[in-house]
Figure 1 (cartoon, one colour):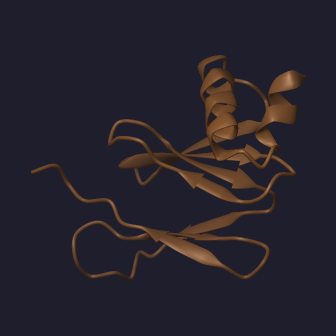
Figure 2 (cartoon, helix red, strand yellow):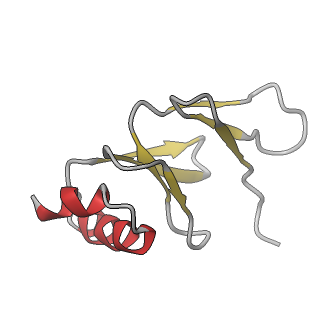
Length: 101
């Protein structure tokens, strides 16, 4: 499938466009998860370098890579809990969901 090949390229713009096309067609390399009913994360399974793509509040956050784990921090005491994404190389990012003003 050409889309899968494009997801693994080093060009981030090409990868994001391939993701958008595949997401519109609910393609297999994308696993969508709702996080605490507040936002969604699309895990894009690819052999390409890790990439995080976020565009606007109503769209899912796309995370490209392999073996990415995620957890919500329900111990957090202020508003909605942060969500942590952990990558195989030991790096991680934290996503905070903020209610619209």
